[in-house]
Length: 171
Image 1: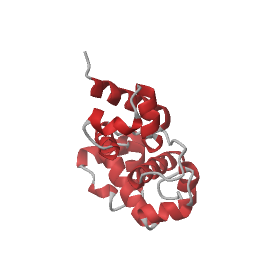
Image 2: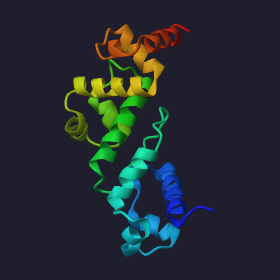
Image 3: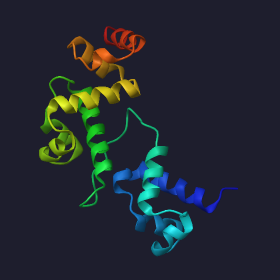
């Protein structure tokens, strides 16, 4: 039988699947599991922000992750940056790694182009971060696009992964 803490964590994961980590609120979670919002730290043994970090570490990176619209006015910067990265991955798959624009990413992430720039800087930095994520998650179409365009970040991928990406590209 699961402990109360494990049950609360499972409920939190369910909420994250529904609307994304970026939209998880202490109030909603507490209401769902029938604990008083003021007693969250006592029940869980940590603050809500520490709990969010614990959840973030436990959420598997999914190359097909959905871009959830932001329901709150202010979101955790780490969550917002991750949401923008997921949007960039989605745009790179649908459009092209080399031709995507800051506006394309902002439209998909439902944010401003200024926020994309604030989180990642230049488009060169966006592409570098995106390619590193693609290599880490083994997203072959994006790696292949980078290799074809002689992207220096794509060239840093392990040799087997580069071969696998190019094989998938030419199928």
